[in-house]
Length: 111
Image (cartoon, rainbow, N blue to C red; front, side, top):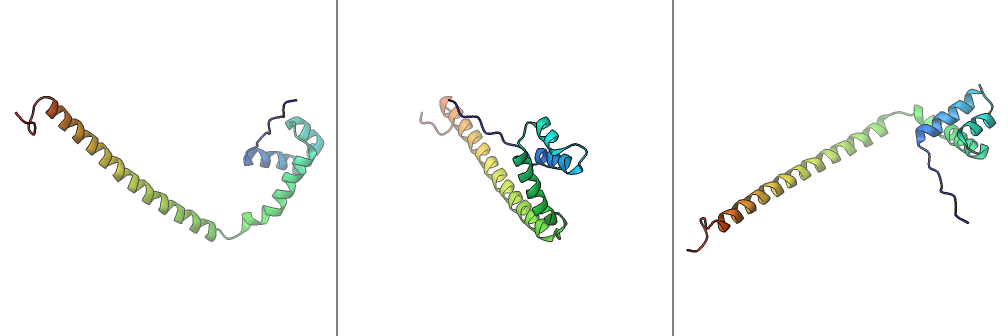
């Protein structure tokens, strides 16, 4: 018997389902049926949301600093890669130019 493929859900989808269940406009069982999910799964997502909700209201300084450091690191990496790419392009063009001159009997080839 083949195993069922495990489904993965985006954080946005999970939030949408949990908020729909928390609003109470429809029963959680109905929300689960509509999205083809088990009630246990939605309950776990709901618990995760409730446990981590306080972090939404924490000071953004730590996250902002981490983000700023990551952006600075990535900008440095982009700069290094851009320089490396430019060097590669120039070297390739130089090698091609010299190969063409040597093939045509240009300067640098013995006569």
